[in-house]
Image (cartoon, rainbow, N blue to C red):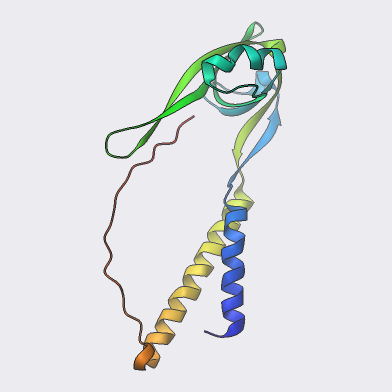
Length: 164
């Protein structure tokens, strides 16, 4: 592998963590958000203090939740409150339903797929894999003392459940 190619593959590796977030939050009007949508709600300080014991977050003014119901009287949100480890190594997120008055919700942002970031991340991943495969193939084609050997691999399966 040439020096320039090695530097470019390191650059791709450095970019991947920065591009990992394939979602973004766009401001939305509360009445336009459909039930079941993933939202980030900015709430007043009074409401943050009121719901803190229920959701195990002290003073959080920004809440990630699923919007269950919204009307003129208030908003019903399903907020993650705790996590527990399940048998077999999975993580289960426990949620709490919280009702907030409409005036207690300062702003709502809707979670949306960021297609540009997702495309860049996928392209960078494919390019990184291509560089690694090319390096392995060219190294094994040369043969000799630096020949590449594939190590024995053991697969460990674990389940991670992430929910809102």
